[in-house]
Every structure is written in C-alpha cells, then in structure tokens.
Length: 394
Image (cartoon, rainbow, N blue to C red):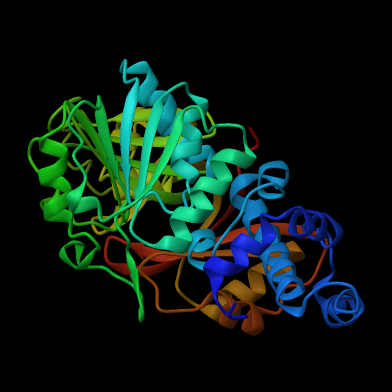
C-alpha cells in the first residue's frame, strides 16, 4: 500500500482505527504537527498517521465553506476543498430546485459531494457522478458521514456516459481549474460548457455552475443567468434551463435577496451627490447597476465605472451607501493634509478606475488619529478624482 496513494489514504481513515485517530488529531496545531506525528507513529502505522494529519488540515480549511460541524465529519481532497461550493450557496440553489418541484437530480462532476449534500438535505434524490476514484470515494464517505446515503447514490464514471433520463433535472459543475490554475475559456472546462449546455437541454430542468466572469455574450439565449454573492463576495454564476429563458438576476446571500433585470437603459453620468452607492459584486457581474441607480434616483460618476451617486439616501440591500464629505481632484498632498486636519487614523481605500494601489496610498498619507474615513480613488466624468466619506449606518 503506497504511502502517497490518496485513495488508499481514505480507505485507511474509514477503518475504526483511522476514525479514532482522526478524532484524536482533530484540533492539532500546525506548529505542533511534527511532534504529534512523531508521538503517534509509536502506536500507529506511519501512513495512517500521515493520512490523518493531512485530513485534519483539510478539515480545518474546509470549515470556512462547510461550517465546523460538517467539516469535522466530512472527508476532503485538496482539490475538493478548493473547488467545492460554499455550503450556503449550495443550500440556496438546492432550495430553489425544491421550490421548482424537482425531486431528483443527476449531479454531474459532483466533486466531494457538497452540492449533492445540499440537494439531499432539501429532500431531493441525487445521483452523484465523478470520474476520479479518490473524489468519488470522498463523496460516498461524506454522504455516509452525514446520514444521507438513503438519498445520495455515488457513481464513479465519466459524466458523458451517464444516462440522465428519468431525472427531473441535471446539475453540472465542470472543472474550472487545470495544472496552471483557473481556466477562463468555458470551452476549456472539463467537460466543456458546450457539452454541459447540451446535457441541460436534454433534461426537463437544469442548472450549470460556471465562473462569475463568464462574458454575457456566452450565455445561451434559452438560459436564465444568475450571479450569486455571499456576504458581499461573488461566488458563482448559474445558467438555469427550464425556468425563465433570457432572465438575468443577481442573488445576494444571506437572504436571499434577488434583483431581476428589467432591461433598463444606462443611467447616465452626473456630478457627485451627497451619497455614493457601491453595488454588490453580483449586481455588477449581472450588469444590473442601472437597476440600483433607478432604485436610489442616481446616476454614474463615470460611464465606465460601477459607482452610483445620488443626492438623497435610499437604503438598498443591493449596494452599500456612503455619505460623501469631500470631492477632490486626485492629489496625494491635498489628501494627506485633509486627513491630518480631520485626524483620520483608520483609512479604508477603495478604487475603481485608478492605478494607485491602496497600500501605496496609505504609506504616502500616513494616517494618524482617532477617526476613520473611506477614500474612493476613481474617475468623475473621465477625470481622476478622490471622494472622501464614510459608510452610512444601517
């Protein structure tokens, strides 16, 4: 049995001795790992100790996505931790499928089973398919660890060979990472986006998870496109089939709160008002900044930048509002003098359309004092500018 065989590593950890050792090393401090490994190898095989400590590290990393309770029971691969869907996003998508009346899903490219788990917890029967033996074994172990084997069947197979007839929907999560990192060309996904779209069109309903940076022109006309953020961070885009063809929406978690496109024209450029609105990343990716501008009665600071300005405060969940106190042409010396006068020691720097790096600006202005401020490095009607203000309290 090879020490570096990850499939065998998982088999070792699923034994009673392996499970007990996993419990023992659960909270191991990485700085103490060598000492712990040396001690444990006196009583356990070296390959088992290495596998347990490696899995403990992966579980610690996975807690951010899955929560400490689930992550502490699940089994992961390095790629599985990196590529799996955040549990809150998977749960939202599963709830939406359940609300559509979907009772069975073929989960193609299931990875370590994060989406299959969410679907099963929503009461949906799942066939989870992955061609990688290690990954499929982890998905099977996770369904068992979380008590979902009655709803989740894991199959090791090439997804292109799987018959999805008889399922209410298919869900496809193509691999978007290769040996050199992220893959940006949808046709370089594994499997390619064109294959996933074909599989989707053969099913009554479908959802395809894709990178949020996908060009809008690459979205099929018969698909609904949804961009999802969680806690302000854009996590993914989803192409839905069998729902609302041509619809475009941005969904913000927690919530969920969904902003649906009404096809509004560009809001136009106007001078800075008292308030600046920073749209959520999902809103920007979905090209729905005009919807935010319409809600707050505002316009753009610059035609190419997603900052909305308005004279009145209209709180919206789809953008963070800031009250602007100063509007200056870009000038580091003037900014430094203003911050010194205001005794600003905590400076948040945001930028769009500026080449200046936030840390570089902080070093130059050397903020000191008990007060806080936010500076926006941007363009106003094409000219470099600085807007200073602070977030509006909820």
